[in-house]
Length: 199
Image 1 (cartoon, rainbow, N blue to C red):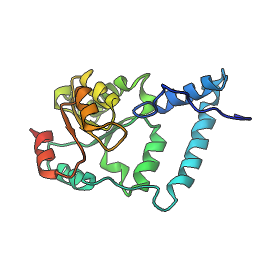
Image 2: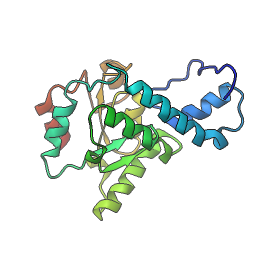
Image 3: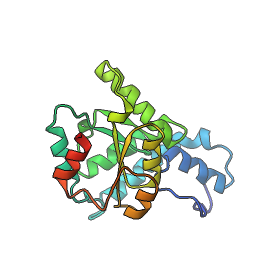
Image 4: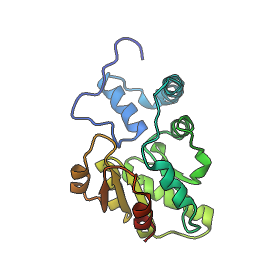
């Protein structure tokens, strides 16, 4: 963008936001009126810099319980795993690969570029599920897992259940206060969490 770049001032919070919204907010903060015209260049630069960052030793770690819970859910034929994230699709793939996770494990997805707000993403994911399965899935049968109040909000506003995990900047109490159906400190309790998801 040239010159000094100012970061987003408070009270903006990146956690749970969408990459396109963060880009536009950065442009606004820096007096740029051409966010749309420059977004593709930003996405390319973002991926290039992220790739460098993710290759650094210790830059990525899979949080406790994640792999065991994914494996437990994949063993149940009723389950279709999906990825709902505020990231651009290519950024989400980079992050998954860096954590040793195959993006193909998540046949349904919705990304930051699929809606104007996070609340739009479950709608996109459900549409893609219906296209893939040939039948609609009631939102009440969907569990959205996330670590921010925005994840909880997008689940509630779309009639989905929310599993909130306090592995980010929000505490269990914060996530419960946001209305999470279940708020936990981490995903270590595989048996109980899988049973709750599948109930």
